[in-house]
Image 1 (tube, rainbow over the protein chains, first blue to last red):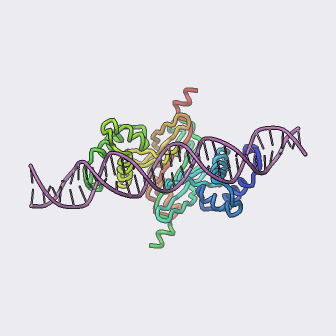
Image 2 (image 1 turned 180 degrees about the vertical axis):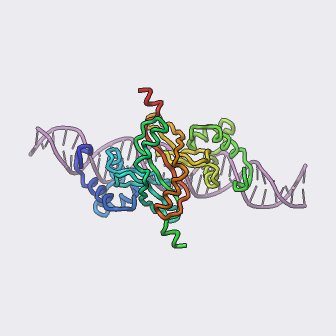
Image 3 (image 1 turned 90 degrees about the horizontal axis):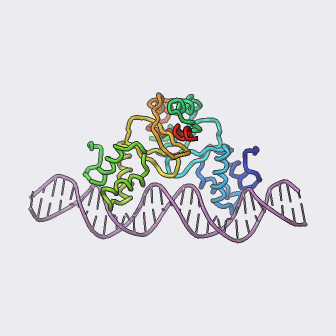
Length: 132
Length: 132
DNA sequence: ATATAAACAGTAATGATTACTATTTGCATT
DNA sequence: AATGCAAATAGTAATCATTACTGTTTATAT
């Protein structure tokens, strides 16, 4: 936890961060809540949301607009994209060559100060294609 | 209105489409509701949502995950990206060279069937930069 | 040990969207 | 022009994700 982060330690936040570090599923706030409750049964959903929004604010995690209702959270900090399967709902990482350049390109085209972007693809994943 | 569209005419849907055709502001459902009510005062918000989701389903409009609470709608069908100013909240179009290729690239990297994508940049727009 | 503000649990409120139901209406058929 | 019927609507209730609020607990500096 670096000096850009929150001031005080809390077991609740540690649990949330630990789960995010060790998962690939890009969980929603509610999935995180369910998981962390296994260890801290009386944690509050508000606590999950507050910590997620602080962690996002400090750039330790990113929020993915998956487009299927709830936001997804991801601890990978290297720029990358996401794919949402419209069949099974799974959200997976996608590493594209242009991931790192998109902000610069957008800035030069628009004249704006571009801080970040959210790139989410939609379709049918490999697993679901095979099943048919 | 082509044969892929809904079967029957309705003044409500025509009004919604007309507004979308003639605006650049990428309105939310509620902005559309407010506008259309000027002409059809007793139109229902549910009617706006139902028509937007049908129009989206038939590919006549697209939905933009702007990340600021409500979805935005856009009648431009040519592939393009969007920029959301974190200062003034304005959503603007952004035409990038890679817009048309992204789906193909993502498909070849992931092995998935990629149907579409949503690319939204975040930052401070030119107008807001000048103001400071 | 104590003080203090950060973080919390629990609950209520909000806001966007969807679902439901009875009524209206576009339009094909007569 | 009248009739029938399913599509579309208005109005309202319900749902779901997220935020706000309040009184209590707790990390940590002194």
